[in-house]
Image (cartoon, rainbow, N blue to C red):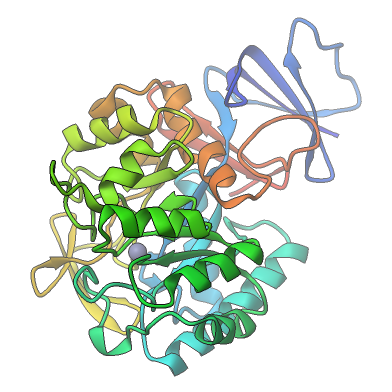
Length: 384
Ligand SMILES: [Zn+2]
C-alpha cells in the first residue's frame, strides 16, 4: 500500500482538502481527507505538500514530441517521448496518425498496436498509449490542412476495416468529414466497434453534419481548425458542433490555432461538460526551432508555430500549458481546466480514466496552484 498526500485534490468533480489517496497494485483504494483518515503505519507515504493532486491528463490527439513522430518512432524514441509526456502531466494518450500512403499507414498501425499491447502488461515509465486516433484518410479535400491530397481516401467500410485489422482493433478514435460519400456507413460501423467518431477536417453544411451525428458521431476534432467557418446564414458544421449538447468538442488552446476569445466562445457554447483539450502536438514539440517530421511530411518549427508551406501543421503545445492557457483565455478555474484535460477526454472516447476514486487506475498529475507540473504518478508509481 502506498499513500500520497497533498494540500488539495480534485477528483476532478470534487475538491478535497488535506487529501490522502491510498494506492495498491496500481489502483486507487481510497480517497479521503487526512482528518478522516486513520493514521497509517505500515504504509509508504509521499507528501506533495502545498500541491494539488489531479487525475493524469489524457491527450486524445497527439502526433509526437521530442523529435519522435508516432508514425515512425522506434521503441526507444517512443519511450523517450512518453517520458516527455509524463513530465507535462500526461498519463494516457492516443498516438494519432496523419494521412499517408496506405503502406506507411498500415505499418505505422501495426507498430502502434505492438506498443499499446506492450504497455498493457509492462511497467509505467511514461504516458500510456491506450488506443489509436486515425486522423484521416477520410478527410475533406477542401479542409485537409496539410494532409497530403493524394492519400485522402473516400470512406468505405472496407477501407476502414483494413486499417482496423492492421491496428488489431486498437483504433479508438476516428476523425472523418461527414459530408463525404460513404461517410455515414463508416461512422455507423466504427461506432458499432466502440470507436469515438469525431467530425472534423470537414466542409460539411449543417444538414450533412447532422447526418453524421445521426449516424453515430459524438465529438468534433480541433474545433474551428480545418472546418468550414461559421456563417450566420449558413452555419455549417460549426452550427451543429456549437449547439448540439450531445457532442463534445476539442480545441488546440495554444493561442495560435484559435484566438483566445474564440476558445472562450467554445467553452461558453459547450459548457464544462463537453469541452475537451487536445494538443495536436508534433515531433517538434520540446525541440528548438528547425525542421521536423509529421508522418511523411516535413514541417518547420519557428517561434512556437509549426508550418508547412505557410499552413499550420500541428502544434508545439503541451497539455499542461493548454491547461494554464484556458484559465487565462476563458476564465476556467484550475479544477475546470484539469477536468477538460482528464475526465472529459476520457469520457468522450469511452475509456475509464481521468478520475480519482476507489477502483480507478492510480494515474495522477501533481500541480502547483498555478498549474505547473511537479510530479506524475502512473499505475501508482512516481515517474522519474
Ligand atoms: Zn492532428
